[in-house]
Amino acid sequence: MKRIIICALLLLAVTAAEAQNTTLQLLSTKEDGPWPCAYYLLNSNEELGRLEPKSWAGRCVDEGDWVLGYGPLSNSPDAFRITPWGSEVQPLLVRRHFTLSADDVAMLDKSALTLTCSYDENPRLYLNGVLLWVYNGWNDNDYATRTFTPRHKALLREGDNVLAVSLMQGAGGGHIDMGLTLTRPENADAIRSVRATDDGSDEAAYDLKGIRQRDTSGVYIVRNKKFTKK
Image (cartoon, rainbow, N blue to C red):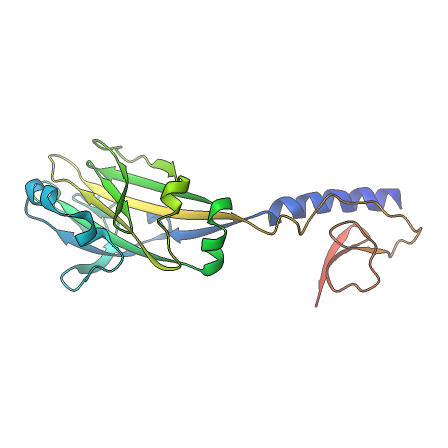
C-alpha cells in the first residue's frame, strides 16, 4: 500500500503542475499561419505623426476604409510576407481584435499577458487606443517579448479588444508579425498537498486532496491511476 500511495503522490504532483496554468493564444503569430487583421497605408511619416492614436487604434474605430486582410505584412518575399507592404514608400497601421471573457477579466490580476513582436521599423504598439510600447529601429527576424504590467492590464475590457501597431516608412526591409498570449492560473485551491491515508485496501479511492472517498465522482486516484467519473 505504501508503494501505491507514493505513486499516487507523484501522479498528483504532475497533475497539480499541469492544472495550475492555462495558456490561451489570444493572437497568433506566423508560426500558426496567416492571421486576420485590418490595415491602412498612409502617405508619409509626417501624416503618421499627426494622427491621434484613439482615432485609429481605439476599440470603436470605423474600419470601413481599412483593408481587411491577413498578416504578417512585408516588403519582400521572405518568411513574413503574406501581404505585400511597400515599406519604403508608405507607413503602415495594423489593427487586430481579440476577445476576453468575464472570467478572463476577473482573473487578470493573477494572469500573465505576453506580447511577442518581430518588426521593421520603429513600431508603436497600442492597446485599445492607449500607447503600450515604443521600439526603435528593427529586430531583424527576431522577436521582442514584453509582459503586460498591471497598468497595461487595466486597459483590457470584457468582450472586444484591439491591439494596434504603427510602423514608419523607411529604407530597406520592412515587416510586422505579432502575437499575444494569456496565461492564467486555474483554481489554486482545487489541488492541495496530499494527505496519505492507508486503510489497507488496494482499491481505495482518493480525491486530489489525498482524502479517501466513498463517492468516486469527479477526479480520483485508485491504485496509482487517475480516473474521471461524472
